[in-house]
Amino acid sequence: MREEILERLRQEAGAFVSGGQLCNDLGVTRTTIWKQIDALRSLGYHIEAQPRLGYRLIQAPDRLYPWEIDRHLRTQRMGRTVEYHAEIGSTNDRAKALALSGCAEGTLVVGECQMQGRGRRGRGWISPFGAGIFASLVLRPPMAPREAPKMTLLSALAVKDALRAHLGVEAGIKWPNDLEMNDRKVCGILVEMGAEMDAVGYVVVGIGINVNLNVAELPAQLQGSVGSLQAEVGGPVDRAALLGAVLNEFEIGYDRVLAHGFGDVIEATRRSSTTLGRLVRVLAADGEWEGTAVDIDDDGTLVVRTLEGEVRHVHSGEVSIRPRRA
Ligand code: BTN
Image (cartoon, rainbow, N blue to C red):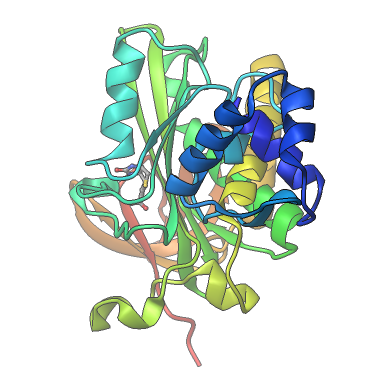
């Protein structure tokens, strides 16, 4: 009901809709309409009411409410169930709990902010209220656990494609999970899995995008490396529309993977990689070493030729790109 009223107000594009018209359209009383308008206002919608004219929508709040995301979806499964939190510890933790309790594939957890946002390798993820997209998607891919790390590449590509489709900007992929623009990280992906020896039970894809983050307010040591879409495009970005675009692109890519495997994903990652051809420092369990990133293998690993000419495959771990020599 609330969403139907909102939709009717939106259809009028800022013009008034009379109370009587709303009552007729929705088959309810004026009191019901008034109560729902009141509820919408308390969610942050700016709605004007005029005695003989009715109601008009002045402004919608910048929130990732499920119905705001839904307006932008063209998916069958991804984001069709959304659990919304104004504040949460970590959306990945919540999504894992939902996965374990049997939720449907495509269930999405979103938070306006995270108090314990998690990055890879035990790091945190800066998640201030309303400044980014902090979202986790539950999947149940019928694949072997060794395939699951490639879900990171698929997710990074989905965000990259959504940035192009929705904002017309190009981001590069720093293997395996960062999206960069102008050498600054604008998105990170944390894929976590629950599995038996031979089958994936669930995969949670956690996506953190620095959308309207004010980089100037970050600690000094992050200023050079952390980016924000707002700074890149020169103005605030509609988070709900961008998240919808990410889910649309994700479902297209995921369905392709389920039908044909990861071949196209690996190929597209190679083309979009900011890592290939660069001198990299690898922080592995067995120590630190340097080499040139020469390829991304069909299994998703990064192929690096060491300074001594040995070719090594990097499965995970930390890879930092060394500055280009002047
Ligand atoms: C990284 O680059 O280290 C990965 C960052 C992933 C951050 C996202 S924000 C939504 C989801 N919930 C989390 O706690 N982390 C991921």
